[in-house]
Length: 257
Ligand code: SAH
Image (cartoon, rainbow, N blue to C red):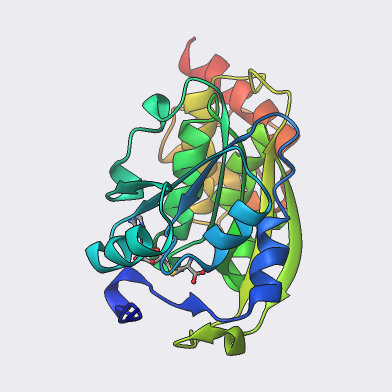
């Protein structure tokens, strides 16, 4: 069987190490669902491990017709969805909540995480390999240079674990960056404890000018004037999620008065 020609614009870096593929497939907890959607199966290295793990309800979504042809030949009976994961309707994927896994295309990895967040009623866990720097950003806590929008907003609804690093040498072609595997699992939060849209705007408004004091970034977005709040003289990277929620409630009161 011919192999799939790696296409750079699709972020195709195929795993060549079965031990690592198995280690990634085993990262899913699957204690609350048997349904798994793999994003970007490529030539199916990870898919094979998921089948061996006896995942009950497995489907894969792949954008590359050449990969799809290859997978159809190699895995009879596998549910293959042809298309762009970013355009795929997760709400209608399955009636029950499900898990997402992948050795993700690195050019869209942040968007994959935001998409899971937007569909958090359905996405019970998400695990996969991404660029190490993005993994660090997602997992970072307050005080860290890489702490940012993704880290704060994902933490509202997901518990996040940084699991292990993967070197470029186990891929073909090798990526120019290091990789890491992370997992996020849905926590019990239904409501963040503040207006969620406003929280997103406050987090974005402050981190988009991360060196500025919060007072200055908020002033250009909300009519806070000279009102006082203990967080205003800090920088966004110093605030925990709980503090952002408190700050959001304070902004909310001003906006609605
Ligand atoms: N899982 C495979 C391939 C990883 S490379 C392995 O580990 O070897 C990333 C894969 O994602 C490629 O197969 C690429 O075609 C696919 N891909 C890229 N963008 C995509 C998108 N928007 N939706 C679905 N799949 C995508």
